[in-house]
Amino acid sequence: MIKAVFYTRDNDIFGLKIVGHADYGCCGKDVVCAGVSALVINTVNSIEKFTLDKLIVKEYESGLVKFKIAGPVSDSSRLLLKSLRLGLCDIYGEYGDKYIRIYFREVKSCLR
Image (tube, rainbow, N blue to C red; front, side, top):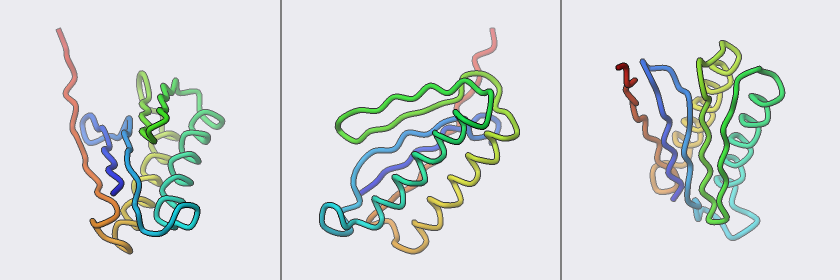
């Protein structure tokens, strides 16, 4: 199963952690994994190419991918992240929580 965790601050998405495999189909023919991967990779590439936001990306051989925007989230990145959320939620709606689960974790600011 794929587990996606959107990180939010004041209900604004600024990052994502995604891990796992859907196991919907055999390797190379898993449409759920392929769809999720395409959405995540395209979002990261689009933020890097079309915005000035500083994106921190970590990829691991295990399939874990984490990314976050360091600093304020621009309107362009906000739209791209909302589009990612829409796409992942649509996949969830089509295939269900046997293959993908989506969580939202509110991260509080530490003001001193």
